[in-house]
Length: 86
Image (cartoon, rainbow, N blue to C red):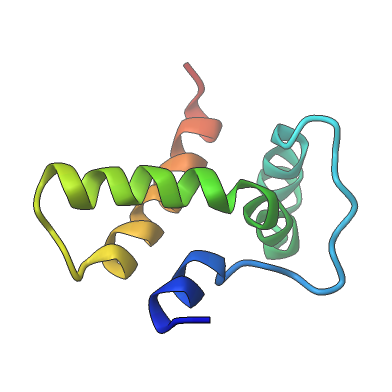
């Protein structure tokens, strides 16, 4: 595996957490119980979407080399949107 490919899989958990029917359940548990484990489980399954969003930003704004700077921001905004809703 190349170094840049490792950046795409930084949230893979072993053993794999049980998958919820709705991944939003992990966010609700994270927010109500204030337990990082639930957010980690969410990211385990949602990481590909976060990667796609971060890659899109990198490409749209020519910010090559800043993927790992942008990826955590995408995660943070996922929580903000989940907290404050539509």
